[in-house]
Amino acid sequence: MTIVLTGRVIKAGRACGRALVSPAPIGFLGGVDPQTGLIREPGHPLEGQSLAGRVLVFPYGKGSTVGSYVIYSLACNGVAPAGMLLAECEPIVALGAIMAGIPTLDKLDIAQVQSGDWVCIEGDRIEVERG
Amino acid sequence: MLAGAHGPAVQRAMEMVVALARIYGAHGLVEIKSAQVAGVSYANIGDSGLAFLSHWADEGAKVRAPALLNPAGMDLQAWREMGVPEDFAAKQLALVQVYARMGVKATCTCAPYLLPTNPLPALGDHLAWSESSAVVYANSVLGARTNREGGPGALAAAIVGRTGNYGLHLDDARQPSESWLVTAPLPSDADWGALGIAIGRASRGVPYIRLQGPPVASADASATADHLRLFGAAAAAAGSMSLFHMEGVTAEARAGQVRPPDTEQAIISALDEVYASLNSPIEHLDLVAIGCPHASLAQLEEVARFLGGRHVATPLWLMASRAILGQAQARGLAEVLAASGARLLADTCVVVAPLKLMGIRSVATNSAKAAFYLPGHQGAAVRFGPLERCLEAALCGSWR
Image 1: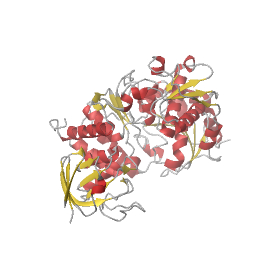
Image 2: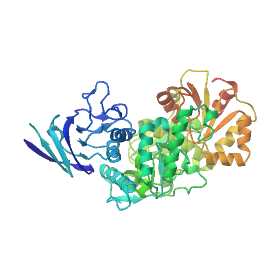
Image 3: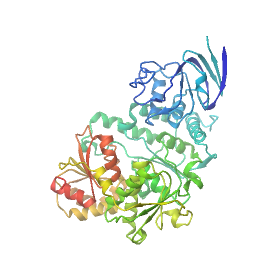
Image 4: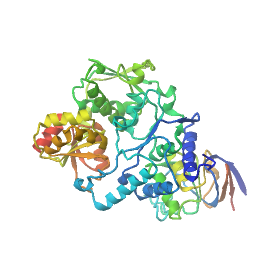
């Protein structure tokens, strides 16, 4: 089954990867380990999971503005998400995505994507393959 | 720029400016007269920030608009005397160096509007400033137009010379939405800061403020400006306020560009509760800190007058820009202050210096903004009061 979604381009580019869907917002400073790409915020629904190479799907970013630089560090360390899809992208994630060169879209119905789906982003178009 | 014709550094900057403009629903971009960039303290942005900024500088990033830096985590020259650890200092110096490579001036001040070498923003000028106390001063007292930009956003704006035309760049967002009457007397500098906390905490929009009693504009002009700085800094810290109008005082109110709103008037008749909320019941002080926002020459003169050659018993930091300290030096004022045992610090302040690493746990200050931030950001207990009371505490060694 293939679902096609469109969104608003925050950082243009092409990327494919397995979806990792977070029902909760993500704060990158303190919430994600820049060395390993592991989510380490205590009590976060994705605590302990790695976002390296995944298409990270989450409602919006939260927390310190230094989070933009943390996203850049993830890319330097080779553990950044391949792409990011958000319901509503705020400046912290937007600038981090541009710094790190991670294709990122927002203004889309993230409920359409499930963890493990194969997701490809190209321009403002997203293809989601399930099963 | 967006297509990459000016190279990858400019392309990246333009992508950032355009992304922010889209997110905020901007009406295109506006040219800026200057940028002021936060995110300078290594304690704040860390290795991740240093890594990205170095990469951007390596790509050839250079500012087009004049750009100034916010304070760093230490005095860039006298950090040893401050007691800042060696490895922190090395990283901090590297960070300022990276900004300098991009053409950002290492002014390292939160009060860029006091710098003698930089043109004062004028009514209607568009800026991309990020320090909250400078943003509220530029918007309100000077009538220039800036949103509170994040550090990377302000730097990106400086590199392309433009920022998104949204928020406080637009006429509509600058009209007052709430009405305040201040009947509390404001005899001291600390009262102005306390008033800033009171209004900043409760405000949900753009306040229009009337003061009962003598109009401020008739008082000594530089004292008025310093009081407005303490007020705005506190209001911005307590409630993210970026613009206020004060009848007969602020730029757009004086120019007749704004009208008092029809809303019901909130009244502030006392500030006791603010003082109670900012004070811890401590007597011993590790430090007395004056100059948040960075002190003006007039404020340094006031300190020297009060000390009158007497020597302090508690470390006293006087925080200002290097440019203002240069003026103080030229007038012999720095020498007088140093003879009283005061430490004149440039480039940094008590809010961003690594206080914990330096063993500082209790601070007295005349700045409501510093008093608001120190417990949470620095884990320090605070005494907050007028300049004279802080200096008295510095002289006798404890808060009384």
